[in-house]
Image (cartoon, rainbow, N blue to C red; front, side):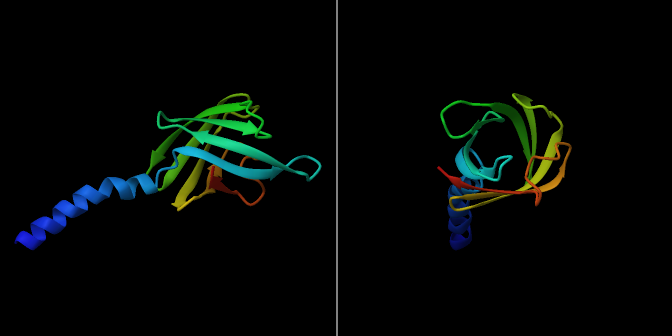
Length: 124
């Protein structure tokens, strides 16, 4: 019984760390092609308060802001400032070490997520 209790307590202590590892909160970097096919760096900052900010060109200037919700392994995003499209998008979410991968389930903004519907970012 003591072993079972100790195992349970150890699991409860470690559980928050496992959940933090899956959190998308933080700064993420990726590159996207512009209208001429040239790769443009961008930074996405995902905040714990349910908001995000996108800096195209990674020049320190935020061009797009939005809000998000998490439900299990899915993230619903919606741009609120700086975007022509304010429709919601739903993406599966996977955090694996320093990589965040968002795969489109549905999105009212056709250009978001690119033609494949996959956004892969590195922690940065």
